[in-house]
Amino acid sequence: MLELDEWLCQHLNKTKEAGLYRKVRTMNTAPRSTMLIDGRRQIVFSSNNYLGLANNQRLVTAAEAILHEYGVGSSGSRLTTGHTDWHHKIEEKIASFKQTEAALLFSSGYLANVGVLSTLPKEGDVILSDQLNHASIIDGCRLSKAKTVVYNHIDMDDLEKKLNETASYKRRFIVTDGVFSMDGTIAPLDQMISLAKRYHAYTIVDDAHATGVLGKNGRGTSEYFGVRPDVVIGTFSKAIGTEGGFVAGSHVLIDFLLNNARTFIFQTAMPPAICAASYAALEVIEESYDKRQQLVSNVEKIKTSLIEMGYLVKGDLTPIIPVIIGDPNEAVGFSEKLQEKGIYAPAIRPPTVPEGESRIRLTVTSDHTAKEIDYLLECFQFIGKELSIK
Ligand SMILES: *Cc1c(COP(=O)(O)O)cnc(C)c1O
Image (cartoon, rainbow, N blue to C red; front, side):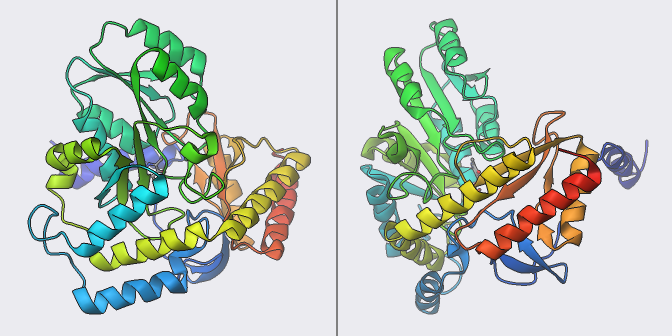
């Protein structure tokens, strides 16, 4: 038998040979559009801080006040000693923001997804899950005793076919990302919800990337399509700019999850100061029509220009802009060249995306200036020619 480290090294070497080795980079500044990364100035096109709130003064001030009053940690799970008035307030705020009866806070979006999917669908039920759903949905499905059936990405014909094929199951749940994190596509919730009604299925939408971004008031895909899924999941870690996850829905759903979801019951409550910052964030978002307009115009500018240059750009009008390169090593080479020029935009490779679809995944925020965007486009023009990629 090999020593543990020797065996692990063999694994890592294979990962390296396949061009799939990952490592972390150190940010030496607050999350802004231009940051110090590993000590070097870079314009960042990879953050989820879509409205620039992670560093917003109103959020910082709100957190600071509660930090002084309540301390740093919450000291227990919500059902023991961890629940404060700030947890209550933020849950009421989420429900009013999402226009649902109630909401339940989790420590992250990941835990909210795992909590819902491992709790609601039971043995004898089936979960119909989009092929490109987030890893936390996939992990939730794995923990569930229900069977999981995967349908082709945003393909409503395939979903309908699979609804027909699963008629013998006790209950059917359809689960989807609202905005897909790697492709920037928007799930067609209007069609999905009419299918769900017709086939008597329940709908679960993970609105991680849509909350704060889509819809006139930033309420997410439900507002964008004017529909009401049964269960809405979200995170504070993207446009809201803080940390934490939530589920929004009926009083009964929330009561059921509070009593059953293990990732709620056995997890320490979020720090009250972060609840206060998130509360301030939702207030800012409700007033941030201008920020959303700026975000959309930044996205449009980048997408249109890259397509004009001849790049293969995927997705709908969302802040996630995948530029397909194909080969993982080429994608990494492209990303490195961008970095040499002071642009930070990571290469995304399998297993995160399918084989042959390695990409540069750009994300845009309302804080990016016209100058920063022009420079990004110049770099794409230059590197594309140099590597003969387009
Ligand atoms: C980021 C993300 C999550 C996880 O949220 P965290 O709060 O970071 O744990 C879940 N689902 C989707 C679609 C995401 O993009």
